Image (cartoon, rainbow, N blue to C red; front, side):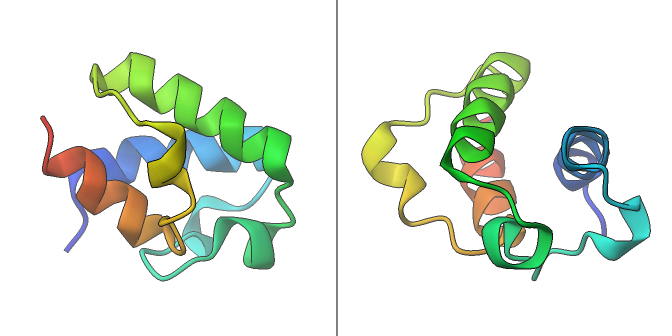
Length: 78
């Protein structure tokens, strides 16, 4: 049940965080599972905002607990 949004985000994260793409799932926690820090998360959100043309307010970022949360947020707005 992969989506284009998920595939693009997975590709980005695999490259940015040096993680094998097959280890990245909708249930992955970007911070806990891959050791991303707050700067990585901000960089990811900025990149994804630009790539998908979706505004992601700072207060929304704290609601993202899994990659699925990010994917659903973006899919609901494009």
